[in-house]
Length: 150
Image 1 (cartoon, helix red, strand yellow):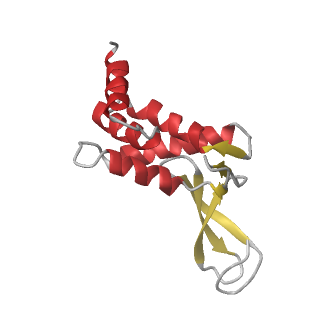
Image 2: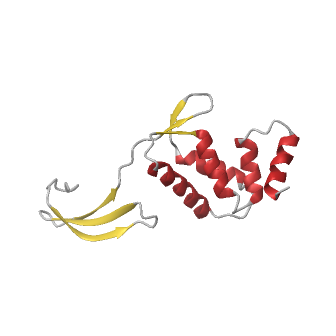
Image 3: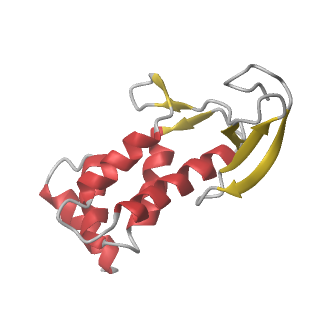
């Protein structure tokens, strides 16, 4: 690891810690030449994922789009940002584990719905109404009936 202060290539690891979500390791290093300390982060390199949109276009996967859509669904509802971030990370990891380089936006939407339903039914319906593009009130009512087991 190249020292950011003197450029020397030799350093030793003084301390290592896992991040809270377990996705990276923080390493505190000391340069053997100048004895200054610096921090590095080690994480698994993930391959880029492409999202296949309904209109046939392709876009790079963006976890912030999932998070933003859930924030809108939970508007004025009781949920922490940590919970929404946890769900987003869980979805992102599930997609990465599939080892497929392309995933449809429909698949992502279903993954979000699957995780919202047990947390908050109102947020679930809000998300579903946008994601499933309910054309009329009857479609909306059918989804509510389906949720309630009618």
